[in-house]
Length: 477
Ligand code: GLN
Image 1 (tube, rainbow, N blue to C red):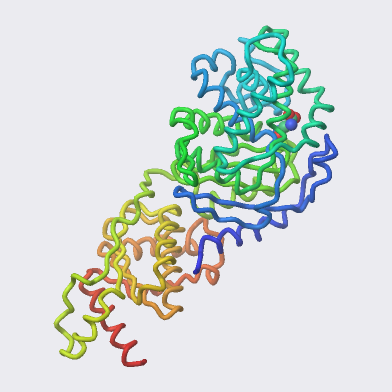
Image 2: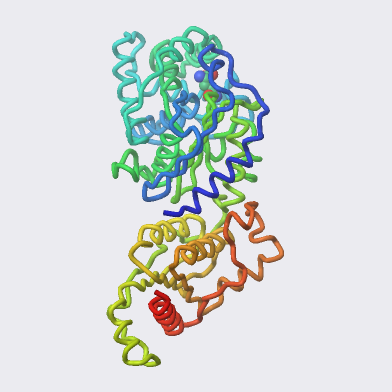
């Protein structure tokens, strides 16, 4: 019914829309022809719930975001050790299409073209002659794998593929250099063909977010329940995406955004918060590194505004709702008249208690809020009990308080049982920082209410308050 998360995402997009610098990729006509102002954002959380905004169903080519996926296939099939013999894992500090290798003549990492072409070659049979039918068959497996990560059937953009192939001199130079070093066990043209095809797979930001959440979940696609790759592979992907995913700007990216990510010249960025969520952004104007300008800015905002930096540490935010129950088994308190008590007994199920636990961050607050949204029609009072919450992240606190206000506005009552004053303490701590140090979202959008009414230190107090509310509602009716 109400989604604060959608409000945040819309706000972040509004903040970044003005970023119109950069140019769309123009090395092939198909990429040059896209709408430069296209802008989509999707977020897929740990249980597979998807938030989609803007051009989230517009298809574009995956381009270099294919690199971690093909690498995942190679290590799933051959194991880390064998792949490590062939492809390094060191950030190169160079452009993605640099014609370079390390001192063992291995591509420096799988996120630059040399490493990606080599990873593609590892999926092909180790023979020097490969016919087109074989490449097509292997590409079918690649498409199956990518589709399983996205949770839907993906397709090839034939026109982009034809153009990539026709104009790929630089990639051919890289492929032939690798071959001349004896690095390829297969036919270089076949490896290049497979690489051009994988780059030309069409995706949407919803797909990227789903792929991201599959990586975040250790290889289990939360939308389909299918295990696509194992935990070890996921860890490997997250590592190389962290150190090499955003090309030359890796250090700046990790410091400023702190989300393992991969970009593509089609304008997409895939980012992952390990254990929690996947993000897909699309906006085709690129910076000098080939990263989407608005995409980078959007990730920066998501990270700072929503506290998504991966080193925002010591958070146990997934097991947030410990239990949910109504007051059916709880006796009506003695302070009311017999008549009032009689009435209150008829509506014990209209009061629902939500016990939260863990450290509350964006992801935890998101699932708690979504549960409240779903239940809203069935309740009059929601009592949120947070005695087992250790730390409340500023954004989570704001989300909790704005959910409370929304419930109030809909004629429900929300109460907080906060014996240790976690919310008040965090308000005090952050009050001078305008809600939250990083949350650059206006207060009215969040519905933030700094006076904190209906915060109780015991459950008994909250129940009494709930009963008073129900009686008042009854007498007003
Ligand atoms: N097809 C492009 C290439 O190989 C992909 C590059 C990218 O997205 N960074 O040059």
